Length: 458
Image 1 (cartoon, helix red, strand yellow):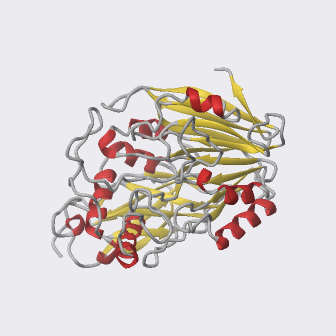
Image 2 (cartoon, one colour):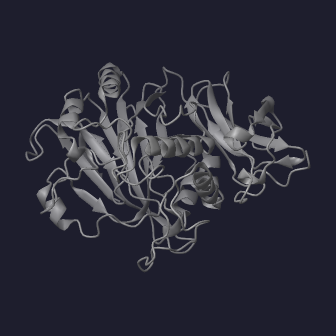
Image 3 (cartoon, one colour):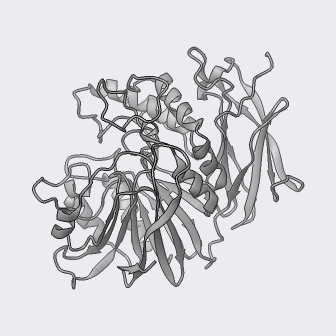
């Protein structure tokens, strides 16, 4: 094999942290957008060396080994580490020949009995064409314990013939919509070449869920809703999920057109993260599918953690609009499913959501219209990293929804601290996304008291 060019152009990542281990990721791609060979790589396996150290200078290497990058998986590697200390920072890197990757920082989950606070952030909706990922650079600087990504990591769209003003800040590798494995791979490569996204992956372990745009806008269940045959859509979804796995630090590979996304990630006695798939199992009026719903309700009722963090993609609380019918692409379109979940709501329920490209905060109530009704939990809805706002004036929506006290239109992310004695969410927003270098500020903060929101004065 000829000597490779620098292969770590897409950076490094870690994720799926457990108390004793994590997944380490990279993909070899000396020419990320090569028109004929994925990543510009030869069609043969390549041996990749990895190292894990206690310190950023790698003076104290604690684990090392090799892994084979296979061409069938676009020369991506997923190193499954175990035997590490809980709640500990580690640093990792990869090498091929004399090429060395950037170093990443990861952190294992706390031990089951830990009561130490958990710092995490959640993000979603990072459309490359719509702006710069400056918010992710600020997130990297916070070095949280874990980052939760709630979907729309990429957007599959092609470029429309007449884009609106200010909507296409950065060009893509192709103006065509992603439909094939090669097209999805190139779209991920374009995103992964972004330095701010690389910084966010290198700063902390991630746990991620896909939503719709990793495959196609507004798809759900077995059909995409555009008349495509089930067989053709399954082929497209298989390609999309394969590319997603190739570019994310996941523990589980897709099986054809299916990917196991719902899972439990415990963080000591403080927080149980319950990752829920609100896209793949929709069927008629059922949002989750019977098997996933049984799994979720068992986790909710059986959890002994202080905070039960239900991480999922779409708006959970009721959000009545002034004139329009309820959204069919949110839990409002599946009210019976939502009521069944809320019937099992435990003390300390916190729902985190994305999808709608704005910040919202919601009280979850037994009666949406009655502020004095039983408090079932709260929902924090995070804005987009860059994607254009879904709503520009929310005053009429807030007036019709007394359980929603907050709306904000900044781009950014939500930074949270969960502890045995409290839960706080800080909405972090950048000043602009149409050019690099935006400053960031905290636009609002909330704490959770007795399963209700309490706004914190800044």
